[in-house]
Length: 69
Image 1 (cartoon, one colour):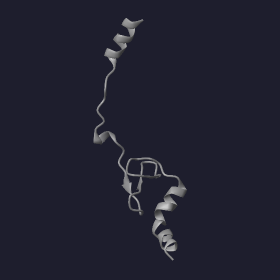
Image 2 (tube, one colour; image 1 turned 45 degrees about the horizontal axis):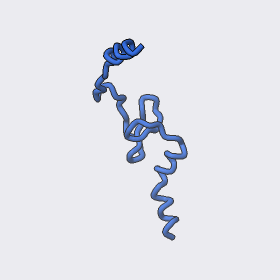
Image 3 (spheres, one colour; image 1 turned 45 degrees about the vertical axis):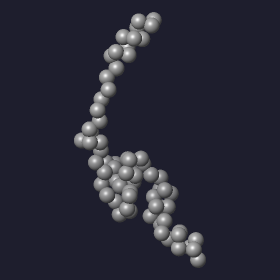
Image 4 (cartoon, rainbow, N blue to C red; image 1 turned 120 degrees about the vertical axis):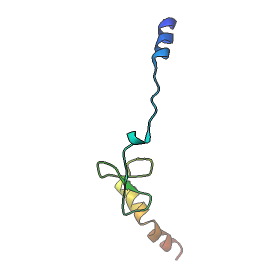
Protein backbone atom coordinates (compact mmCIF):
# COMPACT_ATOMS: atom_id res chain seq x y z
CA UNK A 1 0.00 0.00 0.00
CA UNK A 2 2.78 2.46 0.90
CA UNK A 3 4.61 1.57 -2.31
CA UNK A 4 1.51 2.36 -4.35
CA UNK A 5 1.12 5.78 -2.70
CA UNK A 6 4.75 6.61 -3.40
CA UNK A 7 4.27 5.75 -7.08
CA UNK A 8 1.21 7.99 -7.25
CA UNK A 9 3.10 10.89 -5.69
CA UNK A 10 5.77 10.58 -8.38
CA UNK A 11 3.14 10.73 -11.13
CA UNK A 12 1.68 14.09 -10.07
CA UNK A 13 2.42 16.84 -12.57
CA UNK A 14 2.25 20.53 -11.83
CA UNK A 15 0.99 22.79 -14.58
CA UNK A 16 2.09 26.36 -14.98
CA UNK A 17 -0.81 28.69 -15.62
CA UNK A 18 0.25 31.27 -18.14
CA UNK A 19 -1.45 34.59 -18.71
CA UNK A 20 -2.78 33.42 -22.05
CA UNK A 21 -4.67 30.64 -20.23
CA UNK A 22 -6.49 33.17 -18.05
CA UNK A 23 -9.76 34.57 -19.42
CA UNK A 24 -9.55 38.12 -20.65
CA UNK A 25 -11.59 40.60 -18.68
CA UNK A 26 -13.24 43.56 -20.34
CA UNK A 27 -13.53 46.84 -18.45
CA UNK A 28 -17.02 47.86 -17.36
CA UNK A 29 -18.47 51.27 -16.59
CA UNK A 30 -17.54 50.79 -12.91
CA UNK A 31 -13.90 51.29 -11.86
CA UNK A 32 -12.39 48.04 -10.55
CA UNK A 33 -15.21 45.91 -11.99
CA UNK A 34 -14.92 43.96 -15.23
CA UNK A 35 -16.93 41.71 -17.55
CA UNK A 36 -15.95 38.08 -18.05
CA UNK A 37 -16.59 36.05 -21.22
CA UNK A 38 -20.20 35.46 -20.08
CA UNK A 39 -20.80 39.22 -19.63
CA UNK A 40 -21.04 38.81 -15.85
CA UNK A 41 -19.64 41.45 -13.51
CA UNK A 42 -16.40 40.22 -11.93
CA UNK A 43 -13.62 41.69 -9.79
CA UNK A 44 -9.95 41.88 -10.80
CA UNK A 45 -9.39 38.26 -9.78
CA UNK A 46 -12.32 36.98 -11.87
CA UNK A 47 -14.69 36.33 -8.96
CA UNK A 48 -18.33 36.79 -10.03
CA UNK A 49 -20.05 39.64 -8.19
CA UNK A 50 -23.68 39.52 -7.10
CA UNK A 51 -26.05 42.30 -8.19
CA UNK A 52 -26.05 43.74 -4.65
CA UNK A 53 -22.22 43.83 -4.62
CA UNK A 54 -22.21 45.61 -7.98
CA UNK A 55 -24.76 48.16 -6.72
CA UNK A 56 -22.75 48.75 -3.54
CA UNK A 57 -19.60 49.40 -5.58
CA UNK A 58 -21.43 51.54 -8.14
CA UNK A 59 -23.12 53.73 -5.54
CA UNK A 60 -20.32 53.70 -2.95
CA UNK A 61 -19.75 57.46 -3.26
CA UNK A 62 -23.46 58.19 -2.87
CA UNK A 63 -23.61 56.38 0.47
CA UNK A 64 -20.56 58.18 1.84
CA UNK A 65 -22.23 61.57 1.28
CA UNK A 66 -25.27 60.53 3.32
CA UNK A 67 -23.08 59.28 6.14
CA UNK A 68 -21.35 62.62 6.65
CA UNK A 69 -24.50 64.77 6.56
